[in-house]
Every structure is written in C-alpha cells, then in structure tokens.
Length: 522
Ligand SMILES: O=C(O)[C@H](O)COP(=O)(O)O
Image (cartoon, rainbow, N blue to C red; front, side, top):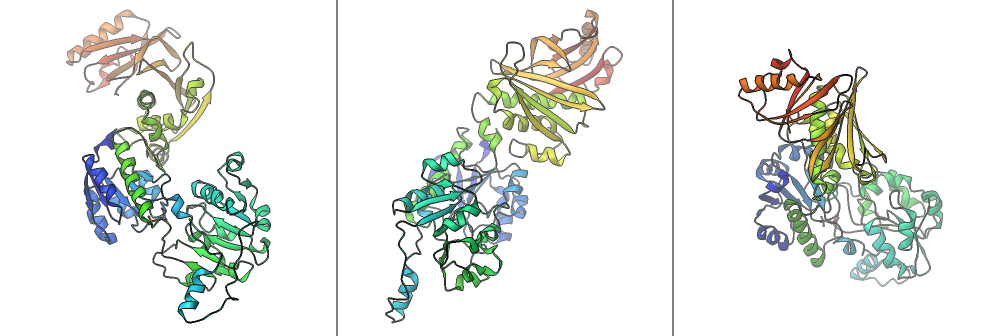
C-alpha cells in the first residue's frame, strides 16, 4: 500500500512535543509551522505526506487541492469539522482523529452554581448571595443527546452525582446505552423529562442546525438548563435568534463556537451564557495523550499494522488484515477483468459475496472492485476514494450477499454487469493466498486460474489446434506463453486464458482464429 511512503509531516498547531518525538523516532521528518495563513498553508502543503492539526487549522478543499502528496490528515483531538472530509476522501486521503484520549477532559464544564458570574460580582466588589442560587444535581434528570464516547463518559460521571440519565442517539443501540445506565427514548418523550440537557453530537451536515429540533417549549419549566459541552456550537446557533433563553432555558455553557474567535457575539454576550475559548481538551495531560496517540496511530498505519481513528476509510481498515489482503487483490483483479471483457460502458456493476466467510466482506470488496474497474482511467485511486470516483464516473457499484457456496468452496466473489441485455460475469476466490478465477461468463474452470501477471483471454471452438496457432502468433511478436488454462466447454466453445510474458501491441492480430480476445495486466 503506498500509504507507507509518508516521510514528511507538517504540524500546524500547538501539539504536545511527544507527537514530534514519536514520529521522528520512527524515521519521519517533522516540520512545525504554527499560525500559517490560508495562503501560506496552501503554498507549504505540497511537499508533505501527512498533516497534523487541532481545531484552528482550516483544512479546506482548496488546501486539499494543493496537497499533491498528502496521504493522511491527523487530528490531534476529536472534532474533525475543521477538515473538509469529503474533499479529502475524494482525493484518497485518510482523515484520522484521536480515538478517546481527550474525552474525560472534554466533559468537565460546570455551570450549575453560577460560579463565573458570582466570581465576577465579587471582583466587582459586590456581595450578593441571593442572585446566585444554584441547583443540586442529586435526583435530577439529565437528558444526553449523543451517546458516543463522550456522552457515555458524561453519563457515568453524572450518575455518581445521583442523577438519572436518559438520552437519545440515532446510532447507538438502546441495549448498548442501557449497559452504561442510559435509557433511550425519542426526543419528543425526552424533553419534558429533563432537568438538564447536554448535547454531545459532532458537527456534521446531519447535525448542523439541529438545535432547532429541540423543543424548549416541551422542556421542564425554568429548570431546564441547556448545557452544551463537547459539541460544536453551530448545533446551538441553528436555533433561531437564540430564543431558547426567552423560553425556559435558564443557563447554558458553551465551549465551542462555529467561527473561532467568534465574530457574532450575541450568544457569548448573553447573560445566561457561560463560555470559554474552546478549552475543552486544554489540559496538559489531555494534550500529551492526544499528541502521542495521533503520532502512534499514524506510525501504525504507515507500518501497515492498524488503522485506528480513521473517519473516512472503512475499506482500508479491513485491508490491513493479512488474511484480507488477497481478497482486496481479488476484487481489483475481478474489476479489471470485467472491464476488459465488458469495455468501459458498464454502468451498474453488482458484486455478490458468496458463503458465510464473506458475510461482511462487501464493504472492502466493493471498493476493491471499483479500483480494478477504474484503474488506468483515474489517477491516485485507492481504497479510500474508489467508490466516490466510481460514482463520479457514472458507475454504480452495489453489493449483495448470498449464503450459497460455490461447489465445496465457502467464500467466493461474483462480479457482474449487464450490457444491452447480455450479462458479463466473473467469479473468483482466493486459494492459498492467491486470487483465482473460477468462472468467466458462465464457463467454469476446473483448474482455477491465478489472477496474476499479464493475461490473454479468448473464446474459441473446442479445438486443440487453436492454442498452438495463438502461441505461434504470440511467439512471432516475441511473446511467450507462461501458463495456459481452459474452461469447460459451453455450447461447444471454451474460454482460454494464457499467462503471457508481455502484452500484445494489437490483440486484433488473433481475430482470424479466436473470438472476444482481450488482454490485461493485473
Ligand atoms: O475536538 C476536540 O478534541 C476538542 O474540541 C479540542 O479541540 P482542540 O484540540 O483545538 O483544543
């Protein structure tokens, strides 16, 4: 995998020194340049294979476009909303974040006792005990929106204050959240039960502006404190005119602002808002963990050992497992073979994984087949961007699974496309770590054909003379036959596959003797 070629990484923010040390110990050159302007970053980025950022560096599509050699964007932290993940994915760049190491720090804001306001009043020479009456957490109900890593940590800690924790998450199953003491329910049921609400959703297109979905009118009167910790405040800003404060929300804590530093100060200046300059993960310990972890994650990927924390590279994650790698090669080979047989015009390619052992293989096999189909046509195609580039090329690649096994072999992959009513189908498998062809357009191979090297395929009558004729023509062109396989006959015709020493300049020189001749290099 050419991800191993990362030799130079740029760090653009204050990341703990352990990050640079760990990378350098693994032979990676590290350059630290902080506070780069957008133009400076664009001018700088081209020579780097990796980029490490926190939340201040905006890794926009423009930056990614200029990043000709970039393979990894590492976020020393959790939120990746400052990275254009779609643009990175399209370019085949892995976007990786810390898996868990700043989550404990990220959820420690407190606003229940009005400490910041009371502190400010003391500094101003006041002595007002009544104005800052707080609330106990004990016995109160906390509604947690977003029950991922941070939401879970918040739940566990708040339970130790004697709080009842309820919540909602569209992804985490109810039985999983129940295991850490959070009963899930639809949001409309949740709002009226909450004394406090805390939101721990990332900022993504699907969550941006989602606070407008919060029904403040349904919340528990006057006790409902909207407490926003580890989420991007754009989720809150989506609420029209911040009128949550005009309703029954009495206080809110905000750690993240969409534009940092904030240009629009409406939210910050509101008397019921406690805010700080994005300090959620700013402790010495959290930063040391984040820096060290992102360095380790990058090194592990470069060494092909593991892919941890990637947000856009599901197929690549599987591809690192040694037992999966031959299947990735098979997918690529079948894609290339189908393209050679069916030409460029296939618009819908269906992949069917066969047998229980490949039940979950669709995710990486579809990407691998797409790579094979587009090889040569697209530059820098890899498992990260293959499906996106296929879609852009007008190719729909879909995956299906069947428990049926082919003969006695559990684990095969069928790739098919239909052109003007004629179906083209290739079926392959992996034998002793080598990708092999089992069937070509309905014709089975008794001796499975290794899908490696340069191959010449053609269809001919069941006639032993043809292979000598073809071999003679190849020899005239200085090409030698290294392997020969022939399918079982179907309708009196057979497919022959020859391993050849180099590709023919023009495969049509065989057309007087054989049909449907194609050649490919795998
Ligand atoms: O997403 C995170 O990890 C927190 O928002 C911290 O961001 P920071 O690394 O910019 O402090």
